[in-house]
Length: 132
Image (cartoon, rainbow, N blue to C red; front, side, top):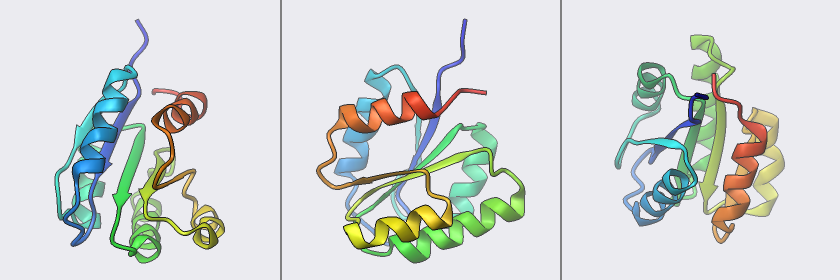
């Protein structure tokens, strides 16, 4: 039996809006993925530690605060330092179109701005992520 895709859904920083992250987590579960939800106000270090402990295939960040660029930059730097670049990173939330190329350049593989249909993000994950 093939292992399910394991995805960590994290709410970094001071962003206190988690309803969307919880709904996305449930949609991912309903699509057959194993989801670990960290809860609110996670630091980048906490997210990295949880991702390592849980041996996830994907780190999914939900960012509504507008701080996606500095948070993603810090996360990607830490991932490189820890040597686990084989873990994909996706981000969703309030992501202006103009920031998408910057996020891609950092190494963010999937970018899902607010309003992205669940089936589109689920399809992307299933097509691009292979469980270890």
